[in-house]
Length: 208
Length: 180
Image 1 (cartoon, chains in turn brown, yellow):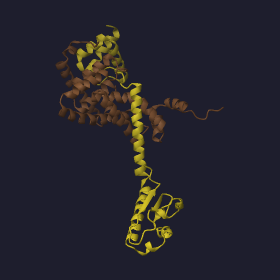
Image 2 (cartoon, chains in turn green, brown):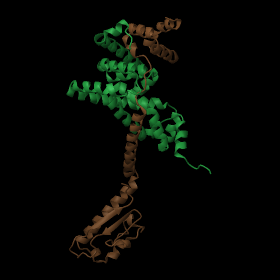
Image 3 (tube, rainbow over the protein chains, first blue to last red):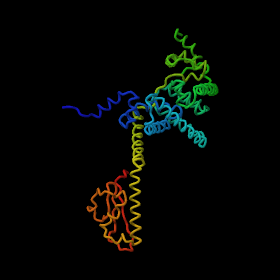
Image 4 (tube, rainbow over the protein chains, first blue to last red):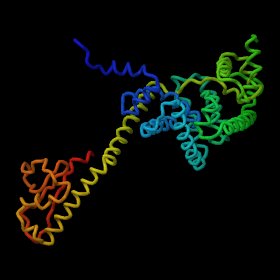
């Protein structure tokens, strides 16, 4: 008997396609390819958003918005360019918008939100992140509070996502020299904040 | 401290100044994850280097599945909106034409014009001028109260076909082209 169609087999085959091919097929309206792309890119998008926003719940909301934006704008995807850069650009912009509105909300609600977040973070993402990652994430959340949205995004993209300067420039929609400037200032502020809040790091403390 | 530790510690300055090529930068970041001594030295050089390392990704398979389910719902919503808005000009025109036909019918009958004096069966003829009703694609006879016209997209039902000349005429327009 000949196997005419198997959804499982189809999913398996589609799952082996590279990002670019999935995006091209999704652009043609292939929902299975789009969903495969969403499944594949959710972890990095949530990670990026979480580092910029500082909490997992908001990062999940932003990730959903990112993929809905991708679906709406998929006709604009140009396969000559990196899908990741395009995706990160959407994710970073939405996270920055979200951060701006969250900061204004936080100013209104005071420090309570911060305490709630700390509790959320203690239980969230435990399955995939190591204790050391969680400790660093908490440290970053605390000391990055004084960074501007662009400085924070540039630092996260460079230091945590290991993006190239030219890619960060494209993601943030600015020049490479501006990115270097953001990074320089971000490091200066972070050094100062770590020295103020966690001086033990300056004398060479290593994480557990 | 190994030889590699010494070489990599000399590259901290280049790393900070964005002068390190990508492959070397990745080697350094991987090394900082594994080597306590170099991590401490890096933090001593510049505290922001404590973040210079690959991080694990955040979403578990369950979270990914939950996000995918929400995205599916969102996409379905977007597509429905697109169908309503986009397929649009034609269907919107049809809907507007149907509404216009209804208004015309009401106007004719409430005013007691000559068209109202015609038998109900003559309505499709009277409405033939409306593009919507050019073709009869539905069988109106199957429905008891309907007496009017039909097209491939919309049907106009007359809800009180036996109304007197001074009574208002009530029509019900069903546009099958609207996909709600």
